[in-house]
Length: 216
Ligand code: PRT
Ligand code: MG
Image (cartoon, rainbow, N blue to C red):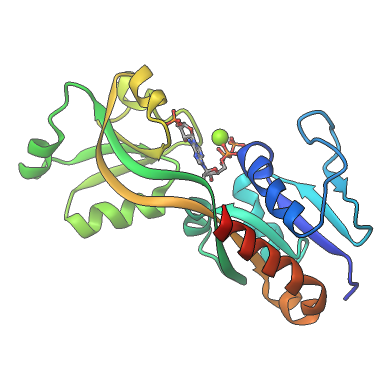
Protein backbone atom coordinates (compact mmCIF):
# COMPACT_ATOMS: atom_id res chain seq x y z
CA UNK A 1 0.00 0.00 0.00
CA UNK A 2 1.34 3.44 -0.94
CA UNK A 3 1.90 5.95 1.81
CA UNK A 4 -0.34 8.44 0.01
CA UNK A 5 -3.28 9.34 2.26
CA UNK A 6 -6.74 10.13 0.93
CA UNK A 7 -9.25 11.93 3.14
CA UNK A 8 -12.96 11.86 2.19
CA UNK A 9 -15.01 14.95 3.09
CA UNK A 10 -18.35 16.37 2.04
CA UNK A 11 -18.76 19.99 0.98
CA UNK A 12 -20.37 22.46 3.30
CA UNK A 13 -20.37 22.25 7.08
CA UNK A 14 -18.22 19.11 7.34
CA UNK A 15 -15.53 20.49 5.03
CA UNK A 16 -15.55 23.85 6.79
CA UNK A 17 -15.46 22.45 10.31
CA UNK A 18 -12.75 19.91 9.44
CA UNK A 19 -10.39 22.61 8.11
CA UNK A 20 -9.23 23.82 11.56
CA UNK A 21 -8.56 20.20 12.58
CA UNK A 22 -6.47 19.63 9.46
CA UNK A 23 -4.66 22.88 10.17
CA UNK A 24 -3.80 21.55 13.63
CA UNK A 25 -2.19 18.57 11.86
CA UNK A 26 -0.20 20.99 9.66
CA UNK A 27 -2.33 20.31 6.58
CA UNK A 28 -3.95 23.01 4.45
CA UNK A 29 -6.19 22.33 1.49
CA UNK A 30 -5.09 24.34 -1.52
CA UNK A 31 -8.51 24.85 -3.15
CA UNK A 32 -12.01 25.78 -2.03
CA UNK A 33 -14.51 23.05 -2.98
CA UNK A 34 -17.29 25.66 -3.18
CA UNK A 35 -15.39 27.42 -5.98
CA UNK A 36 -13.56 24.56 -7.65
CA UNK A 37 -15.29 21.82 -9.63
CA UNK A 38 -12.44 19.44 -8.85
CA UNK A 39 -13.32 16.36 -6.82
CA UNK A 40 -9.71 15.67 -5.82
CA UNK A 41 -8.08 18.53 -3.96
CA UNK A 42 -4.37 18.66 -3.25
CA UNK A 43 -2.99 19.85 0.07
CA UNK A 44 0.29 21.45 1.13
CA UNK A 45 1.45 17.91 1.93
CA UNK A 46 2.20 16.05 -1.32
CA UNK A 47 1.25 12.79 0.42
CA UNK A 48 -2.22 13.92 1.51
CA UNK A 49 -5.17 14.64 -0.76
CA UNK A 50 -8.83 15.34 -0.09
CA UNK A 51 -11.69 13.88 -2.11
CA UNK A 52 -15.10 15.60 -2.14
CA UNK A 53 -18.04 13.18 -1.96
CA UNK A 54 -21.68 13.24 -0.84
CA UNK A 55 -22.01 13.19 2.97
CA UNK A 56 -23.79 9.83 2.90
CA UNK A 57 -21.10 8.33 0.63
CA UNK A 58 -18.15 9.05 2.96
CA UNK A 59 -18.45 5.72 4.86
CA UNK A 60 -18.59 3.78 1.57
CA UNK A 61 -15.37 5.32 0.19
CA UNK A 62 -13.59 4.59 3.47
CA UNK A 63 -15.05 1.09 3.88
CA UNK A 64 -13.68 0.05 0.47
CA UNK A 65 -10.34 1.76 1.01
CA UNK A 66 -10.80 4.30 -1.80
CA UNK A 67 -10.24 6.80 0.99
CA UNK A 68 -8.07 5.98 4.00
CA UNK A 69 -10.07 8.15 6.33
CA UNK A 70 -13.02 10.51 6.32
CA UNK A 71 -15.43 12.57 8.39
CA UNK A 72 -19.09 11.57 8.68
CA UNK A 73 -22.09 12.42 10.85
CA UNK A 74 -23.30 9.91 13.41
CA UNK A 75 -26.62 9.94 11.51
CA UNK A 76 -24.85 8.81 8.33
CA UNK A 77 -22.80 6.19 10.19
CA UNK A 78 -25.83 4.68 11.90
CA UNK A 79 -27.69 4.41 8.59
CA UNK A 80 -24.61 2.95 6.87
CA UNK A 81 -23.96 0.43 9.64
CA UNK A 82 -20.25 1.26 10.06
CA UNK A 83 -19.03 -2.00 8.52
CA UNK A 84 -15.27 -2.07 7.90
CA UNK A 85 -14.80 1.26 9.64
CA UNK A 86 -12.77 2.13 12.66
CA UNK A 87 -14.31 5.13 14.47
CA UNK A 88 -11.63 6.40 16.84
CA UNK A 89 -12.65 10.02 17.46
CA UNK A 90 -15.80 12.02 18.01
CA UNK A 91 -14.71 15.30 16.43
CA UNK A 92 -17.48 17.28 18.09
CA UNK A 93 -18.24 19.16 14.87
CA UNK A 94 -21.38 19.62 12.73
CA UNK A 95 -23.48 19.15 15.85
CA UNK A 96 -27.23 18.81 15.72
CA UNK A 97 -29.93 16.48 17.02
CA UNK A 98 -32.22 13.88 15.50
CA UNK A 99 -35.82 14.66 16.43
CA UNK A 100 -39.44 13.85 15.78
CA UNK A 101 -41.50 16.85 14.67
CA UNK A 102 -45.18 17.30 13.86
CA UNK A 103 -47.44 20.11 12.60
CA UNK A 104 -48.13 22.68 15.34
CA UNK A 105 -51.77 21.61 15.78
CA UNK A 106 -51.17 17.84 15.96
CA UNK A 107 -51.50 16.22 19.40
CA UNK A 108 -48.66 13.73 19.11
CA UNK A 109 -48.76 12.60 22.75
CA UNK A 110 -52.39 11.59 22.65
CA UNK A 111 -52.06 9.94 19.21
CA UNK A 112 -49.26 7.82 20.71
CA UNK A 113 -51.29 7.11 23.87
CA UNK A 114 -54.22 5.93 21.79
CA UNK A 115 -51.94 3.56 19.87
CA UNK A 116 -52.62 5.29 16.55
CA UNK A 117 -50.57 4.15 13.58
CA UNK A 118 -48.49 7.15 12.51
CA UNK A 119 -47.09 7.87 9.09
CA UNK A 120 -43.57 9.26 9.35
CA UNK A 121 -41.33 10.57 6.58
CA UNK A 122 -37.57 10.41 7.08
CA UNK A 123 -34.20 9.95 5.47
CA UNK A 124 -33.11 8.10 8.66
CA UNK A 125 -35.15 4.92 8.37
CA UNK A 126 -32.92 2.72 10.58
CA UNK A 127 -32.73 5.21 13.45
CA UNK A 128 -36.43 6.00 13.21
CA UNK A 129 -37.43 2.34 13.17
CA UNK A 130 -35.36 1.62 16.28
CA UNK A 131 -36.64 4.68 18.11
CA UNK A 132 -40.33 3.94 17.56
CA UNK A 133 -39.91 0.20 18.17
CA UNK A 134 -38.24 0.91 21.53
CA UNK A 135 -41.18 3.12 22.50
CA UNK A 136 -43.80 0.72 21.16
CA UNK A 137 -45.15 3.33 18.76
CA UNK A 138 -46.73 1.95 15.58
CA UNK A 139 -45.37 3.67 12.50
CA UNK A 140 -45.34 3.41 8.74
CA UNK A 141 -42.00 4.83 7.66
CA UNK A 142 -41.74 6.52 4.29
CA UNK A 143 -38.22 7.10 3.00
CA UNK A 144 -37.41 10.51 1.55
CA UNK A 145 -34.06 11.91 0.47
CA UNK A 146 -34.63 15.53 1.50
CA UNK A 147 -37.13 18.27 2.37
CA UNK A 148 -38.76 16.02 5.00
CA UNK A 149 -40.46 19.13 6.43
CA UNK A 150 -42.82 19.13 3.46
CA UNK A 151 -44.29 15.69 4.24
CA UNK A 152 -46.87 16.70 6.87
CA UNK A 153 -47.69 19.95 5.05
CA UNK A 154 -49.00 18.15 1.98
CA UNK A 155 -50.62 15.16 3.70
CA UNK A 156 -47.86 12.64 3.02
CA UNK A 157 -47.30 11.99 6.73
CA UNK A 158 -48.28 12.87 10.31
CA UNK A 159 -44.70 13.40 11.48
CA UNK A 160 -41.08 13.68 10.39
CA UNK A 161 -37.81 12.40 11.78
CA UNK A 162 -35.06 14.83 10.80
CA UNK A 163 -31.94 16.63 11.95
CA UNK A 164 -32.47 19.93 13.73
CA UNK A 165 -29.83 22.48 14.62
CA UNK A 166 -31.21 26.00 15.09
CA UNK A 167 -34.85 24.90 14.68
CA UNK A 168 -35.53 27.65 12.14
CA UNK A 169 -36.43 25.21 9.34
CA UNK A 170 -39.09 23.62 11.57
CA UNK A 171 -40.44 27.03 12.63
CA UNK A 172 -40.58 28.26 9.02
CA UNK A 173 -42.78 25.28 8.19
CA UNK A 174 -44.99 25.47 11.29
CA UNK A 175 -43.64 22.24 12.76
CA UNK A 176 -42.74 21.58 16.41
CA UNK A 177 -40.22 19.20 17.89
CA UNK A 178 -41.95 16.60 20.07
CA UNK A 179 -39.15 14.10 20.73
CA UNK A 180 -35.39 14.29 20.88
CA UNK A 181 -34.06 10.96 19.59
CA UNK A 182 -30.32 11.57 19.93
CA UNK A 183 -27.52 14.11 19.78
CA UNK A 184 -25.48 14.01 16.59
CA UNK A 185 -21.92 15.05 15.84
CA UNK A 186 -19.37 14.00 13.25
CA UNK A 187 -16.74 11.33 13.71
CA UNK A 188 -13.47 10.48 12.14
CA UNK A 189 -13.70 7.15 10.32
CA UNK A 190 -10.66 5.17 9.26
CA UNK A 191 -10.33 2.20 6.93
CA UNK A 192 -9.31 -0.77 9.06
CA UNK A 193 -6.56 -2.00 6.71
CA UNK A 194 -5.15 1.52 6.28
CA UNK A 195 -4.98 1.88 10.04
CA UNK A 196 -2.59 -1.08 10.18
CA UNK A 197 -0.63 -0.54 6.98
CA UNK A 198 -0.34 3.26 7.11
CA UNK A 199 -0.24 3.67 10.85
CA UNK A 200 2.98 5.67 10.77
CA UNK A 201 1.47 8.32 8.48
CA UNK A 202 -2.00 8.28 10.05
CA UNK A 203 -1.13 8.29 13.74
CA UNK A 204 0.19 11.89 14.00
CA UNK A 205 -2.84 13.19 12.09
CA UNK A 206 -5.25 11.29 14.32
CA UNK A 207 -3.48 12.61 17.41
CA UNK A 208 -3.64 16.20 16.15
CA UNK A 209 -7.36 15.79 15.33
CA UNK A 210 -8.06 14.36 18.75
CA UNK A 211 -6.22 17.15 20.54
CA UNK A 212 -7.80 19.91 18.43
CA UNK A 213 -11.33 18.50 18.74
CA UNK A 214 -11.00 18.38 22.53
CA UNK A 215 -9.62 21.92 22.65
CA UNK A 216 -12.43 23.25 20.41
O1 PRT B 1 -27.02 18.21 1.55
P1 PRT B 1 -26.76 16.84 0.93
O2 PRT B 1 -27.98 16.15 0.48
O3 PRT B 1 -25.64 16.84 -0.07
O4 PRT B 1 -26.19 15.89 2.05
P2 PRT B 1 -26.37 16.07 3.58
O5 PRT B 1 -27.56 16.86 3.93
O6 PRT B 1 -26.25 14.70 4.17
O7 PRT B 1 -25.04 16.89 3.89
P3 PRT B 1 -24.85 18.15 4.81
O8 PRT B 1 -23.51 18.70 4.46
O9 PRT B 1 -26.03 19.03 4.73
O10 PRT B 1 -24.80 17.49 6.25
C1 PRT B 1 -23.68 16.74 6.65
C2 PRT B 1 -23.84 16.37 8.12
O11 PRT B 1 -23.94 17.55 8.90
C3 PRT B 1 -25.08 15.57 8.45
O12 PRT B 1 -24.89 14.20 8.18
C4 PRT B 1 -25.23 15.87 9.95
O13 PRT B 1 -24.48 14.94 10.71
C5 PRT B 1 -24.61 17.26 10.11
N1 PRT B 1 -25.58 18.34 10.38
C6 PRT B 1 -25.47 19.23 11.39
C7 PRT B 1 -26.69 18.63 9.69
C8 PRT B 1 -27.29 19.73 10.33
N2 PRT B 1 -26.49 20.09 11.37
C9 PRT B 1 -28.53 20.28 9.81
N3 PRT B 1 -29.07 21.23 10.36
N4 PRT B 1 -27.25 18.09 8.59
C10 PRT B 1 -28.38 18.62 8.09
N5 PRT B 1 -29.05 19.68 8.67
C11 PRT B 1 -30.31 20.13 7.97
C12 PRT B 1 -31.55 19.37 8.50
O14 PRT B 1 -31.73 18.17 7.80
C13 PRT B 1 -32.69 20.36 8.24
O15 PRT B 1 -33.17 20.28 6.92
O16 PRT B 1 -30.59 21.50 8.21
C14 PRT B 1 -32.00 21.70 8.41
C15 PRT B 1 -32.30 22.13 9.82
O17 PRT B 1 -31.46 23.14 10.23
P4 PRT B 1 -32.00 24.23 11.26
O18 PRT B 1 -30.79 25.01 11.63
O19 PRT B 1 -33.02 25.05 10.50
O20 PRT B 1 -32.61 23.52 12.44
MG1 MG C 1 -27.92 18.94 3.53
